[in-house]
Amino acid sequence: MRVLTGEERAFRELYRRHTPRLLALVLRFLGGQEADAEDVVQEAWLRATQRLGQFRWEAAFSSWLAAIALNLAREALRRQSRRGEIEWPEEEPAPVAPVDRLESTDLERAIVGLPPGYRAVLVLHDVEGYRHEEIAERLAISVGTSKSQLFHARRAMRHALGASSRKDLADVRRIQ
Image (cartoon, rainbow, N blue to C red; front, side):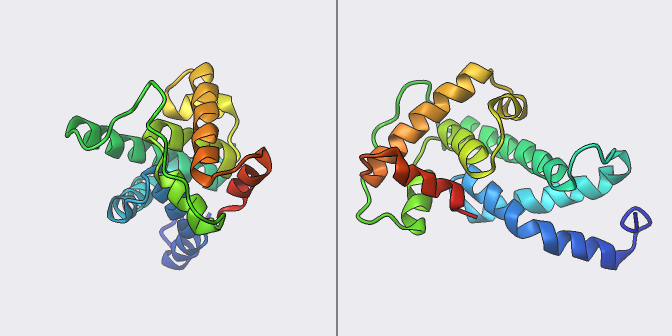
């Protein structure tokens, strides 16, 4: 591959192709903290370029890059947690305030309002399409915890969006 030989144009193409979706994933994962998300994406690209020779092409490049970014995002959340900026609740969170209309910005706001653990699982499962086994591996949690957090996240989303049916939550999957 041309990127392995250091061809700048090839790297720029990879960067241009993958960064918007990667940034959106990390931004949702971090709850809308734009500066932190940009830092994570930049660090993910640095680590990816350093480790590109180790990439075995058994998975999609985008999945490999997303895994690097998610690990870095988890580290960022842990640092924030140690500083007392966030909490990873085991119990059900306080309800998120309902929003007036169901629009993509409302969905984004509702996602950002979720506790970090719930948000992470919801984004990975419902937005990015990961299976519970993959989420458990990526977040270092059990499959049961992944399922439980998704259940609670969806319930909090329904409450936040004022949705009386599960149909409205299907819009979450269309957020890009």
